Structure formats: structure tokens, C-alpha cells
Length: 392
Image (cartoon, rainbow, N blue to C red; front, side, top):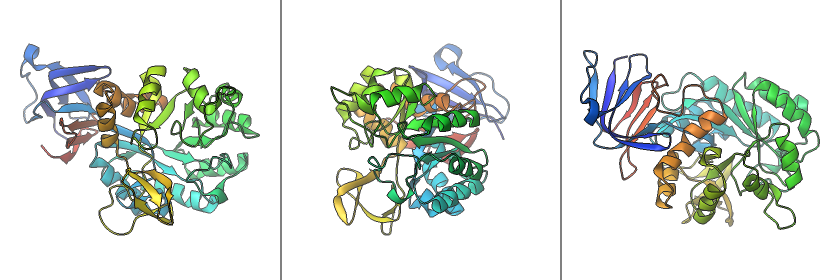
């Protein structure tokens, strides 16, 4: 691997936006240096260094999508290595350097098959890297099932939990659970020992249930506002608990459909930005270019609102057609600072899931880098210093 310098860049580093900068990628695939070109000029780099003028484009950490079911006609429900690798390739087109393939709540057999396919795909990615597996269930509320398969919903079962984790061969990194379920405390303690992050989601929890869950380490939550108990003046519910308790973190889908833009802005006023994670929760037919659209085994239509709806019941929304890039663009259009939007898509998930040397542009960190212009078109993507997409 050679060395590369990106020049004339607008770098998003943490909460700062740095203009007229250069970024050096060393031969090991790490960030070697970030420098102000006006102050330091064209520095001396090793012979053969490729110099790319990005034309004032934004240079950010590679996007990390920690909740995604599918894209481009490929989905985790296919239980196919080829589908998982297809997701990897397609995600790279939208600036994603790493992702958590997310397994729907389904029959145990189907969940295990999906997990095994993901594990088999790890190491063969040609685009975004598989950083872990997210299990969305099966220990969720029967009254907040959402688009999950109700046949797969289970009471807390430690033996089943262990079989799902063992199938993941150390790659299961997160699981959505309903904190109010009987036996959840013991499961949560087991998850801590396994290094698995639990998210409160698909839950009908009371405020008190969420507090009890926090006491055993359930400090993150799945797609805020969606598939969770609502805010009520006599019981704040899950929504209220997440807003009130500053230690609680949350995902949010920023397509403008799952959560109204004004509620997203309210969320960012009530919580520290560092505790909010942008996710797509996108489905298999997202950005699919041809053929019929199927999501989780059902025929779907992409409605004018930008979400997928059941073909047999168009009033029922199935899920998102969001990409990380369009989610960031939406946030900026809602007057959220681009620095905050990028933090939600990079540094925050990296911190919450302890993804080593990712999510920030810091010398020594992996050179997972996304480059996009003012119109939110991808110009380039580097993963571990290798240029995966080149639209310069």
C-alpha cells in the first residue's frame, strides 16, 4: 500500500470544521497527519505519494451504520453470504465504511441461518466492513412488534440467548430487548459478561422499567420514538425516560418519516449530541435498481413519503429507505450543524460499541474516510487506507 494525501479539504474533526486542510494517509492504512495548508503548505511526503485535490469537499470519518437490514436488493433475511457481501458493496456507494448487519426477530431457525451467513461473510467484504452483528430481538414486547415477525417473539430464555450468541462466534455485538420482560435482569448481566450492548427497543416499558434496565447496563435504545411506549403525563414511558435520563443513548432514523424533523431537533436540544446515533434501519429494497421489492419476505411498495409500505396493506409502514448519506443531508437541511450530524454517524457509534481506532480523524486512527461535496455526492471512500470508491 502506498501513501496518499488529500489536499484542499474541509475536514470535520469532532465538533470542529477545519478548512484548507490536508490529510496524510500512511503506508500502514492509518491517518498519519492532518495539517493546515495555509500554515504548513505542501509538506514533504514520501516519494510516490499520491496527491488528490478534493476541491474543498468535506472529508469525514467513514460512516458507521449500526442498524441496517438490507440495501440494493440484498438483505440479512436472505440468510445468504452473497447477500451480505452485496450489502457491503452497495453501502460503500454511500460512504459507509463499516456496518452491523441486523437480524430481524424471526423463527429461531431463520435467525440462526442469518447469523451464520453473516459470520461466513466476514473477511470477504469488498466494500463496507462487517463490524459486528445486531440482533433485533427475539426478546421483545408482543405489543410493540412493529415490522418483526410475531411468530419469532420469545420470553427471555438464557439457553436460546446463548445459542444465538454462539452462532455469532464472537461477532454479535448488540441486541434489542424489552427491559420489562421477566428474567431480563439475568440476561442483561450475562450480556455484560459477553461484551454485548443491549438496546431498549420494541418495548412497552414503563419509566420505572427503563430505570431498572439502566441499573443492569441497558443504556442504549433502538430507533427512538418508534416501537416503544409513548410519553404520557402520568407515566413518561420509554420515550420520556430516554429524554429525561441523560445517561441513556438512542438511535434515530432521520428520514423525516419515522420521526418528524421537529422532534429530531427537540431530541438534540434535550440530549447531548454524543448520546445520539444516526442509523438507517434500511430494508432490502432500499436503492434496489430493478425487480419487485421484497422486505422481510413481504412484497413492499416505496411510497411518496420515502418509506416502505406493505403492498397488501399500503397504510402499514414497514421501514426505511434511508442511506447514511441522505440521513446526514436531512439533518443539515433541518439546521443541525454538519459537525453534529457527522458525529452522530461516526464518533458516537464508535464510542458506544468500543470500535477501536475508528470514528474520528486523528493521527494513528484507521484511515476510514468519506469524502463528499456540498451537494452530498460521494467523491471518495477509503477503508483502512485503501481507496474503495473514486469519483474524484
